[in-house]
Length: 92
Image (cartoon, rainbow, N blue to C red; front, side):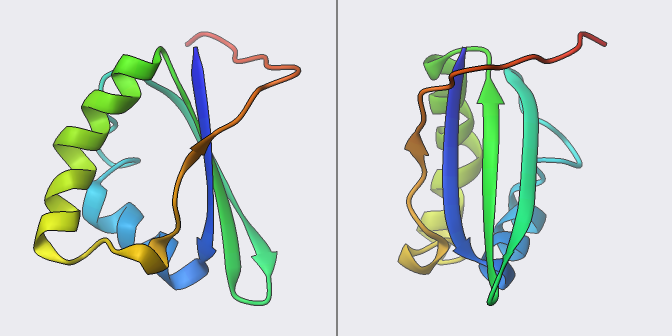
């Protein structure tokens, strides 16, 4: 299992979520995604993946094209891995 987190402007997060289709057409390996409004126009998103490789594959397929087209840039924040202490995800 692999988990990452990004905090960025709320508008930037919404833009990337729409362009990446992360929730509308989830990539293989995405187990869960949760985002929340931090206030002051900021938002945080945590995503849970089957493995670091699954996260990497999604980044190559979904995020790299957004960087290359200019939709995704430094204002969208840098995702970084987190070390979960407690995690529970109910199977579907």
